[in-house]
Length: 121
Image: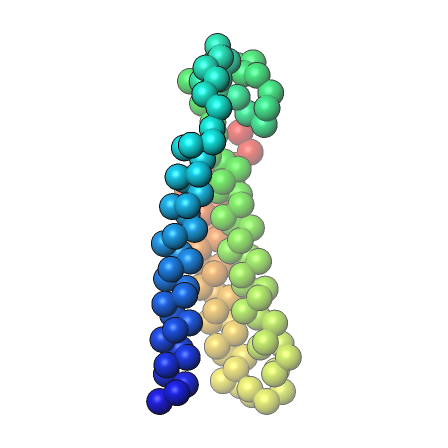
């Protein structure tokens, strides 16, 4: 019963910190802030550099798709590593499962190529 009491007290402290700390910061900021309204304050910028191009320019999603394909193969490597470590103990069933896993990923890769997701245009 004592261990549950300690756990309950720890839970109450965690909830109090999660609720009070952000609110204390917000309230303190409201009273201590300096209100300076300058011309460039509300203009968009990137990394502190003033804008040099119009804001309505088009961003290509190709880099996002390449990153997703990279993550796909990176995760494949992560999941194949334990299989490679325990290769001898798994036997024939382990080999079949590994090839099935790689085959499923290969189907996804072929689908991405067929949809033109990896064309450098």
